[in-house]
Image (cartoon, rainbow, N blue to C red):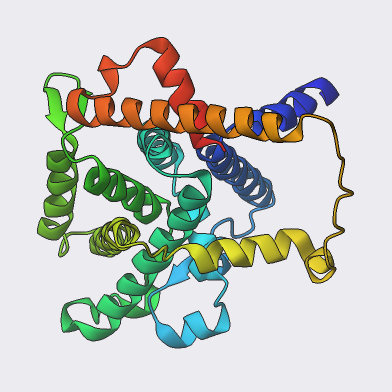
Length: 297
């Protein structure tokens, strides 16, 4: 058992941000399911406790549990719900990381969930259609966050082709458009709240990609919060300046280093151009590896 846990920890540390978020979602699902099973064995209510982590549509209840705006995006209603979300997160996560950074991925996952949750509450409290469902409706799932990743990838590389079984290769812009239109059509369905949240996540993905094209990273504040929480008090201490190490031939070493960095940057630009023009499948194994390594820096 100890080796199994150690292997999980090592795989989590070695994995990229996409795999780490998948680990977190699966882990939370397993823990919450085990707790529910335990409660059911004693004939206790196995579902109501989860509502403290799910996002309520009714604003007065949300004010009593504001943390649910974040926790809801890591919960899932069942194994299939989890499976489909994690498959999309993995597939599009790898493509996203070939175009953006890991910090962008982390920030956009949270931003997509926040926008999805806020739009969900706004719609349920504004539109009379949802008035009968307002007080007992709760939102959970990573779908809004996943849609943000999908749409941001489509905005950056709209001509990239994705292969679907029984359909064939489809340009990424059409995949994103199909998903968004589907959610619009089913806003008044039985899972209307979920589709509204999807639209909020998609809007966040579009907003992020367009803003980044203009030189503004709207996920920057989210990453600063994460950095502050992970660094704790250490962030307040001034960093110690490393001692200068003087060696002979230092200028030559700097020149070689800069030349090597420039060559690597030009190589990545060439691979990205090839990816945009011909799709991911046109890349060689070595090119895919270089792109993947560059995305983790």
